[in-house]
Structure formats: structure tokens, C-alpha cells
Length: 464
Image (cartoon, rainbow, N blue to C red; front, side, top):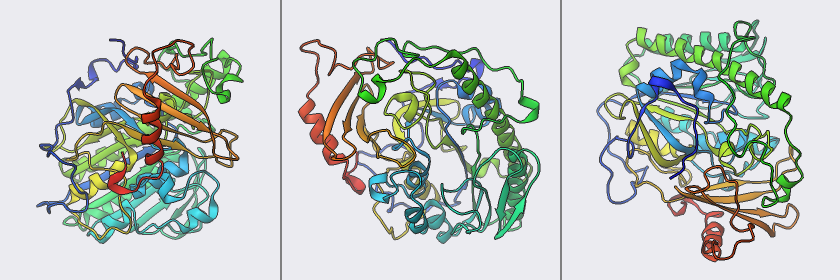
């Protein structure tokens, strides 16, 4: 059986297991709003990077691999439901697909302003007795001067690598130097302040700039070596005639562009790794490490010339797959991996269950707890036309060994193209079996279309 090649993590690579070892999995999906109280709710740390693909990037993050990887479980089939910044982040906070939040693209200022911040991780946890803090990016188009809701402490910014301004507890402050240093100072300060209420659990959400475009490495990493480039068979794919027109028109990516972007993105992640080390060291000093459920992930992946694409937004694996490492001593297996299909909409129901909080939900949750729910057989991925791109909308179903995608006309919504990939025999998505001129290898397209059509308007427990 062929397998997708991942960048080797050396001796620190966590051992493969069949599924995440948390608690026994019940025969039916657990309802996230109906969970038993836990004796001592854990602290919760979430680190959410920006545009970090899964393949290759963890190789330059030894502290992440040590703390989260060796200390927890790495999900090898973790995805975002919409591979775009603002839709992905609102889905993560709310546990709902973009078609239910209404935030389907970037630049939707009015919808972002109206986003229900009470029906979020921070809203439910704060109501459940948690101290909450955010450091870094919140939501695209959210004004710096506007305070984010349901956080006891905050130091938010709107992006940038050098000398950014932060909204710190309602006061906009300028900073000097590299952004990650300021973020580390704010994060560790909030942790020390929360220590004064040690009996009260805390949520700390940290959202760095890296490796988003701009690509300004910190001075000490400006010329840092990065691992040798990995060129999978899909890299600058020679024949894209079986792909949709959004791919067919593309010329080959220049080696210079590829090398520059990849190198700079990896160098910016080195500072994120230092930030992780700073935060986790402070947790250890405060004696909070063993009592904390910690998550490392990203808002979307990014393509490095696979199928000639240097972008996110696409349904291909490098665009939708993100790192997801979960650490919770005594509850999550250490030094393990899981092939379970998980997405960012699963974080909210997972955290509610872990915290033993049973809120009156303002909206049904589309995600499911990775702690106790039956593993999925497929997930929904979706992309809507966004004002900052000409890319047409699409929707996709992804199973453990296959992916089916439909592309739609931007103006009419009509179905205009289909893709299907056998991920066992074609892990790099080179051959679209629905457009390969081979008779007899097609899946049951009618059944897939029907399931995808239903999933595109699903709500709550009816979602895949």
C-alpha cells in the first residue's frame, strides 16, 4: 500500500497507534451538551498558527514536537472544514460549519461584527467558571480598537511581524521588535495573573502571525538552515488535464518562488516554537503542566507547488490538512498518533466534555467530541467564493481512503466539475478517476452527490 510521504521527525516522531487512547468509545456518538461533571476541570491551552500546512512544517519545531508530540497524540488526518482564515477561525470557536455561521469568506466585516461571540469556546467556558485570555490574532476585519468578548484578559493584534500594536485589556499599545516576543510577554503575564486564582481553571488561546504571508523571520533566524525540500510526485504536476479549470490554467511554479516562500515560512515558525517553549516553561514553573489540556493546530494548510499551486483555499490535502496535536496527561495517550478524521469544529464539543460543562447551547454543534464520539467515516469540506480571490466555490467529502469534490459555477451555483481520488493507490491525488478516460473505475457518483448535497446544508448531529 502506498502512503503519503511526511517529513521525517527523527527519533522524536511519535509511535503509530490505531486510534487515540482517551476513554473507552461508546457505541453511539456522545452528545457534547450532555456530559458528566469532572472532579477537576483542566486548564486549556490552544495555540493556533496561521497558514501552517501539516507536511514538513513540524520538522523545524522541536519544542512543539517534544511537548505536544512526545507528551500527547498527533492526529494524522486532521483537517479544517474551510481552508481560509476567517471562516476557519469562526468555525473553530463556534463548533459549526461555515454554512451555519454565515462567515463564508474573508472581508465580511458586517458579519464578523455580528458573529455571536457568546456561542463560542470562550463564551461557554467563561460562563462555566473559567478565566479566559487571548493573545494574538482574533478574527479578520475585527478592528483593533474593538474589545473581543468573553475574555477576562486580552492582547490582540491584527497581524504583522515587526513592531505591531496590540489591544491590551482595552488599551491600544505600540510595541517594538518582533511580534512573538511581545506575545510571549503577554501570555506569560496572563498565566502568572491567573495563578492568583489558582482554584479557577483557565483558557489561554494564542494565535501567532506565522507562517502567514509577509514572511519576515526573526533576526536570529534570518539565515537559519531549513530541512531539504521535499518534492512529492504532485509537485509542479506535469499533467493537470484531469483537474478543474482553476488548476488547468496554471503554469509551473518557479523554483525561486517555491524555495523563497517555503524557506521563509519555515523560518517564521522557528519563532513560534520559541513562543511555545516560553509558554510551556511558564506553565511548568507555576505547576500547571499536568493539569492542562493543550492543543496545537492551525487555521488552514498551504500548498507548496503541489498541482502547481502556491495557496490555500483548494480541496487538495496539503491545503486542508493541518497539524493537530493534543496533550492531556492521564487522559490522552503520550507519544501516539491517531488516523481518526477530525476537524477544527470538533474542538468546542471536545473542550466542553473535558471541562464537564453542559451549557444551554445557543446553536447545535456540528462537530463532535474526539474524546468519546464514534470516529467518523467521512467529513465535509467546503469553500465559498471570497472577495479576496477569484477561486470558484467547491464542496468535498473526505473519507479515510478517498476524496470526492464538486466544483460550482460562481454565478449560478450549478455543478460544473467533479473530482474523485483513491488515496490508497493515489495518495498524491495525481489521477482524477472521473476524468481519466478509463472506463469502469468510477465510484457511485450518484450516491456521493446525494450525500454531499445533504451535508452542505447539515446542522448539528446530522452533519458528517
